[in-house]
Every structure is written in C-alpha cells, then in structure tokens.
Length: 104
Image 1 (cartoon, rainbow, N blue to C red):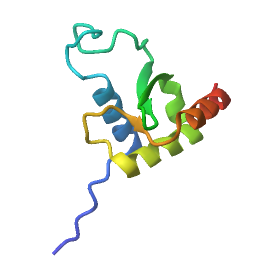
Image 2 (spheres, rainbow, N blue to C red; image 1 turned 180 degrees about the vertical axis):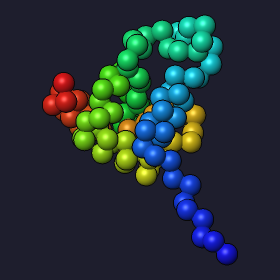
Image 3 (cartoon, rainbow, N blue to C red; image 1 turned 45 degrees about the vertical axis):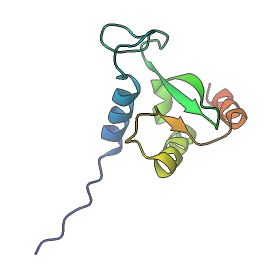
C-alpha cells in the first residue's frame, strides 16, 4: 500500500484561493457586476484585523513581504482559509498598523 502525500497546496495556489475568496462575496451593495468590492482598487485586497475586525485594504505586493507572510501563516493556523469571514489577521489593530507602516 502506497503512502499518500498530504494534500498541501503550494503557497502560490493558497494565495490565489485567498484572493479569490476575498473578492468573490457575490453581488451586494458596494460590489461591481462581477462581485469585486467597489472600494478595493485593482492590485489590492481587503483584510480584517483584530477582535473588532477592522477592515484594511492592502496591496498585493505585500504577499511577498516576509513579515506579512508571517501574519498570513498565523491567520491560517488560527482560522484556516476555508471560511466565509474574509481574510482575518490575528493580531491587534495597533500592531498591524505598526507593521504596515514599516512595510510601506
């Protein structure tokens, strides 16, 4: 009997799934005809931070930044990516703002 490899997707595939989920909430107020949020510019995506789930719009280029990737790994460990809550970052809003000011 052969051992099966874990069903682990490459990081790029996981990131594509995250972005697709974050931008495919359906047609709602504030969304365009294909289901993308009106207030999220091209090349950006929304994340929700902290207990109050404060919404932040961040550039896709941050997906290559080591500190932001570390936050994504923590998000995956704590929440997983298979839910309808949007991409939730498990840290305090003030910590996230501090980190993003360094990334910018």
